[in-house]
Structures are given as C-alpha cells and as structure tokens.
Image (cartoon, one colour):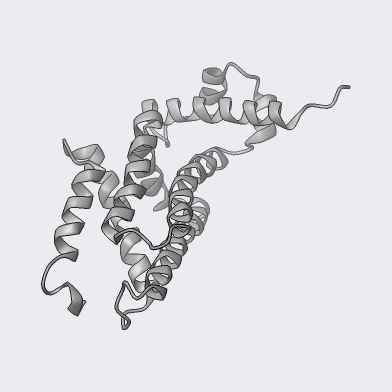
Length: 202
C-alpha cells in the first residue's frame, strides 16, 4: 500500500473540521452527532474516526485553531522592540480573532462549547487546559511589558494575565448577542481606561 503523505492527512483533517464547524453552528454542539459530521464531510465513519474518535476531539481541535490565532499574535508582538502600547496589542489580538470569526464563525461555537463544558467533566478538563494556555500567553506578554518598565509592579503578572483572558468571553458574547461590537470598539474602550488618571493606581 502506498504511503499517505502528511500533506494529504492534514488536508483530510481540515475537511473534517470544516464539516464539524458547519454542523455545530447549524445544529448546535449537543444535537450534532458524529454521523452528521460524516455526512457533511462526505466521508465514511472509518475515515472520520481515524482522525477524531469522539465529538469532543473535534471541538478541541477547532478550539486549538482559535488558540493558535491568539498565541501567534502575541508571539509576533513580543518580537517587536519597543513593544507597542498595550491597548494596541490587545486590539491586534482581537482583530485577528474577529477576522478568524468572520471566516469560521468561531464565536458561536465557542459559546456552545463553554456551555457544554459545564455539564461534561471530560470536555471541561480539556477546555480548562486550553484556557490556561491562553492565560499563560497573556501572562508572558505582561512580563514582557514589565521588563520594559511599561507596567507597574505590584499586581502579579498571573492576575493581569487572567484579567486579559476575561476579555475573551465578553468579546465573544457581545459579538453574538449584540450588534456592532468589534475589536476596534474593545480597543477604544481599553485605551480610555488605560489613559484614565487613576490607571496608574491599579
């Protein structure tokens, strides 16, 4: 049997994930079955289960894609010297997520997954690991600003990183439930807060 290339395997993975996104957004995570994903992808059960044995595996793979957007943007920023203003960086992170959402409809899926994680211990553990990874990336960003003397000492980097992570569900919720909330809106609001005369007391 000829050896299958890694490029082919990755293409097949992406086809399955694209089908899963469509199903999850259309039917909801809980109502979607693996058979629905198979039909949408036009593949056999064996072909899908080879890559993703469980529905939770599909969700985590999709979430990992979103995580890569955040981590990649943060890594790019941390290679700049000097670092841009913090509100600008957060604006860039959420602009990248917004662009990804416009292509992949990730915000609706994220809200469904977080809701399902509240009832599924297995999914909760995997979501916990991914959110912790994003929080750690934000914490590294905070430490980089501290090294440049751009953030006051006192509050731990972990606390500030967790606060930055808290922007994520709020941004996603408003993208889904309210009209007109964009990454630019978020950046303008943060800029006003950080420019406040009392900001240096935080």
